[in-house]
Length: 226
Ligand code: CMP
Image 1: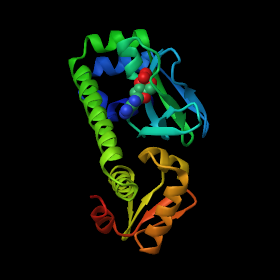
Image 2 (image 1 turned 120 degrees about the vertical axis):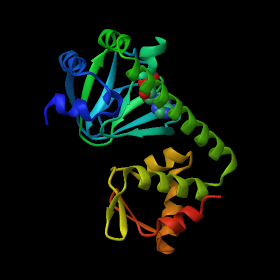
Image 3 (image 1 turned 90 degrees about the vertical axis):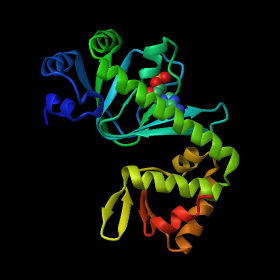
Image 4 (image 1 turned 60 degrees about the horizontal axis):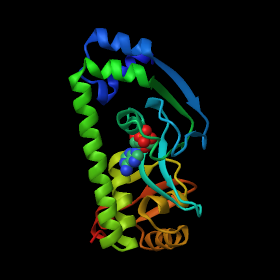
């Protein structure tokens, strides 16, 4: 697929005029990342916006003690790195490739030139930021008010709905997430997620083969959220 064909499919750019797509093609470049490669770290200077053409990226809030929170996972068609461009502050989190990635890079000055003439793009960015804030509010709320079983079930349902592929009666989540990543997504320890996974496997709701998660019964998983 050419860069232009890809750009036409990105939700953020869905209402661009053909001439803007041409400009965008000319002002972006493509980079690749290996699995596990760090694109940038929290507190780095923000120099560009990234759009995922292939692969997936985890956004990580690291702690001094080595623990992490993962507030978001981004996949094909998603953008990230907008916050430090918009507010001029350093990067708010790390960005790490979960699997090999191909990213479109729009550097700071091109980003501002580009949004100036495109109200639709500004609107899409604002609505994405609102959605991300809502999600972060949810995470905060759930961390305070739900136990780990409910939080984990909710995260699995969310992953299934957003990234799951139906395979007969199964839903497969192929994001190459480790138990540690799952724990960081719900503010739990790896040990407690290991226990949860064992429990859900015993109940016949899910199984995890390597880093692939198989969901056998989404409805029963949903009932665990309360
Ligand atoms: P920036 O701060 O430039 O670099 C880190 C990026 O991670 C940030 O821009 C956002 O794109 C993304 N990010 C940071 N925090 C969150 C969050 N709570 N939810 C979703 N995305 C986030």
